[in-house]
Image (cartoon, rainbow, N blue to C red; front, top):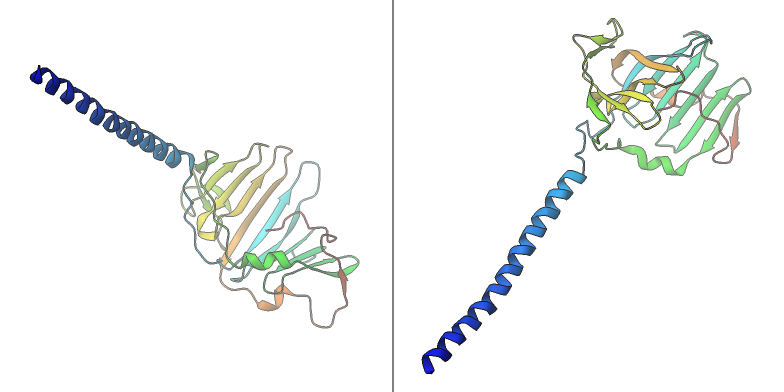
Length: 231
């Protein structure tokens, strides 16, 4: 009788120990599954310089049935940039300036210079980080688009790029060495924007403000219409 009770007690104890062990095993598997799912669901950041890379470039915009728009683009190590566009390189019709240290936008058109306060852009002193999602692929060609090069975006040598096509069918080529700047943008409607003759180096700081002494009209935020090629 005593032996039977001892056997029953051991069986009960074994069952009590087995339950928490089984629970721990299930929890461990669940945590492992969650960690695996999170690692797959969280895309990695794309490597690019932590500080703004200053450079200048020639920009060209074409659209079916319209004259080409050409111009120049300048970006400072502060993240500020200037875009000049028009029918010819030396005849800009529109100048747009994003000055991050001053937290303002400047726009020059046929009516003169406009200044708009933009306090929120002060937070753009550092370049944004991008996550490499499923729409990002390694572009199969090289970009021969530095100053003095051919300007080809299907070259055998030059910069590497990521090709990103969004849900609207807009394709962009991003260069990591330029803070993932869009050196090519192609839209389904045929609009094609490209940056070539790229020269690394700090542009003249005077480019990021209107000339001294010119009249400037101040406007309330969000009233300045941005040009077609901002960055």
